[in-house]
Image (tube, rainbow, N blue to C red; front, side, top):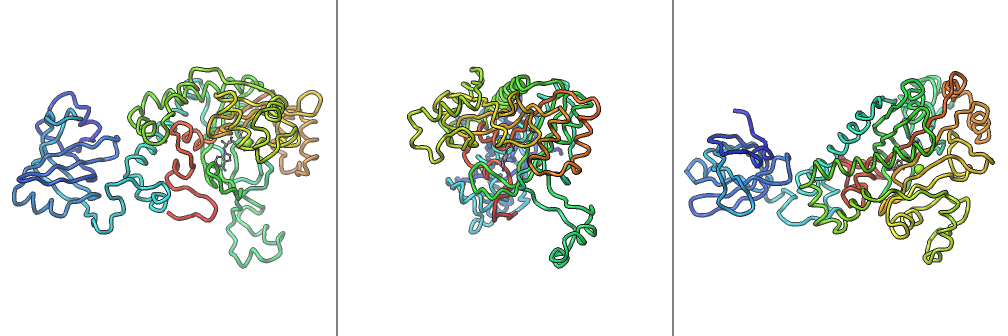
Length: 462
Ligand code: 4AD
Ligand code: MG
């Protein structure tokens, strides 16, 4: 017999004389003559209640069944006389598929701290909170694809292993097939022997190859893992994270801002619609103001202001003295500044654009006057930077000059420069940190808690 998912059983239209439920026991209570089991199979937040009368065989099985065990239950779906659920299962037979020793099973029926649960990342998906988190994560991924698919964008796969540093920030992980001993020897000689015959890394962004595809297919997006060896141990940085990167031919910076705003709103609406039950858990137990924050983001147009104005605002605001980093023209905005703008001042997402050329990568389009580039960052309440993007420099001479100014090697970018030699066109794109979006949607404040097995400095368990 085929198993019925708990979600489907709970949403059944009618009673069913026979069904098979398989899942993990959340609780078991014994009474005289029968037992209650709460079973969860991950298909939804809710458990299904099973009431099962004792027979000698059933008692013998149930004796070993406790919280955490996996079971298979054959029974009948009936209307529940109890409160809180429409349907329950009258069990007729039970089989234990996997024992969980109550002495050592770490997930007992009490609230565990996020810090503790991180140490058992392999088991935490079995809790309500992390089960909900990973279902939302799945739905959010699907929403990304739905958004771009409905807009006619082409989903492209950009490489993970790369020979170029997109951001030019030198925060890359090396990829090599050489042994440790070889690595100590003469660098040039060894590189020739290495798998690719040159330095290779894990990508920090799929943007540069995505640009090549946009300049052929029009509108594209890539959505994959990216890697950064920045040693910042913050609640917002992971060494391995997923990025959503659209890239669009013939878009200018303002089209780009429009796209980012439309996408953020679409993603939130989709998840609120499809994951109502799971989101409710976060609104109840994680962030009481979650729903109003999200509804506010949906309702209001995003604020847009040039970097120069943002800095003036930060310099002159009441909180100016309290910032750890003094706001000043030319600095990269810090999380405290970004959060002040989005959370306290405007109380909604803010798109800051036209940043000083000195603090942004080589590929951003130089504005008239040469002082700023057509960059945009989308800052959101609680998180700070959610999106970074720009209009790209499409003029060959300007791009070559920027590459040289920054001390990069133009030969390594020959293919990228070719796109500006042959039929170059204005184009723009951005990257959204997928985990940061999940943090915003759930109110969770640590990136380690929105990714099943987080990778951060000195942490490579699981
Ligand atoms: O602003 P970033 O560095 O932009 C780029 O990489 C561009 N090449 C993207 C593009 O235009 N196609 O990164 C984009 C976003 C950030 O706004 C942030 O949300 C996220 O990626 N991000 C991180 N998320 C988690 N952990 C990290 N270490 C992150 N670094 C960036
Ligand atoms: Mg950025």
